[in-house]
Amino acid sequence: MSTDAAHTVLAGLDDARDDLESFYRDLHEHPELSHQETETAGKVADRLRSAGYDVTTGIGGTGVVGIIENGDGPRVLLRADMDALPVHEATGLDYASTVTTKDADGQPVPVMHACGHDVHVACLATAAALLAAKKDQWSGTLIALFQPAEEVGDGARGMLDDDVRDIVGAVDVAFGQHVLPMPAGVVGTRVGPVLSAANSMRVIVHGRGAHGSMPQAAIDPVVLAAMIVIRLQTIVAREVAPTEPAVLTVGSIHSGSKSNVIGDSAVIELNVRTYNDETRKHVLDAIRRIVRAECAASASPKEPDFELYDEFPLTVNDETVTQRVTAAFADFFGDKAGELPLQSASEDFSDIPSALRTPYSYWGIGGIDPDTYAAAEQAGRVSSDIPVNHSPYFAPVVQPTLDVGTQALVVAALAYLSSDADASASRSRTA
Ligand code: ZN
Ligand code: ZN
Image 1 (cartoon, helix red, strand yellow):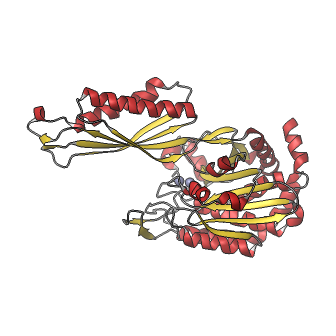
Image 2: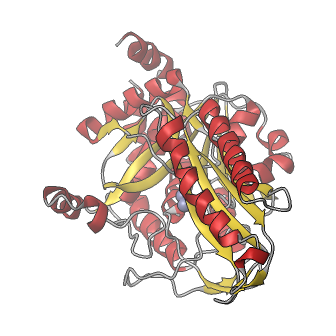
Image 3: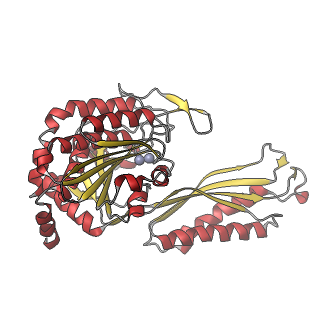
């Protein structure tokens, strides 16, 4: 069974645990914004080199790839994202971030690992080292990939534009994971769509400015934008089947500067989450249709402008790969392994495997203290009491979160790399 190899490799975790935890606290205390992950990348590269990996740095900015070749066998890619968010940390942890920096527009912003990418980096660096230390337990090639700028959706594409394909070569299977607001200790897998596709759109509608006391001389963009915001809510409610999840949020709306001046335009920024390409296309087309029609209804003097940005692909876990990993997790984690609910968040993890035509699986691990979670669940207050990713209070408990994140990566990799992985795969197929 491949779990034998996993237990042998993971026996090394007892000695590595102090280092894993202190590396995590160090990353948490020193977060870096998207595209600025230079120190994090440097620490990762040093660790991979000392574990015996062939390391390439600076891919697509700060991306790092470590490769270790260990005889015949599959080529397995494990991925972690490295960036933090412009959030002011409010966790009160003794290793909380007090970092401030400048964002892409040069504005000073606080920085916090509010999405848990520090967990991903620490776990992958440790899993990579543990696997390298027990090369007699597996054969094949292990590729550890650390990508920048997941939060802005273009880090993986940046690595592809910088020819990461040539560095990693052919890849047979790819894995990624995310720490989520579930009880720490659990690991969840899911076949098929797991994370939504996301699209942000900026819409500019045009009116005609005038004095606030003379509406007859104006075409009021505030009223036009208000009509659009309300009417857009009918897309999900009236045009998408109730069995098909979709979200449309208008997150920002701006027009005018003074109470008695009618402005000449309004800017609406919205975000769409969908789980299949047909729905995504329908919703985006419906937005354009409604905006144009409302502009016509208001006698807008100019066609509206549409700009798509911050695009995230759909994440769809391969069935065969996910079943194999699910069986390996069930062997190793027992009843702590389960099904991951469909997530409304989005990721650019799939960009690289999709470009390489590599099947992949992406799973979730819990990060919330199990007693705290159970108490919130009992009180029916999970949504209000449990801080989620991107919250200034998001604070995964160090353990068992870090152990499980490291173990999951090793177990999944060995489901393909260990000498008896084929036997366990055929066993899981017939189960
Ligand atoms: Zn995030
Ligand atoms: Zn994230």
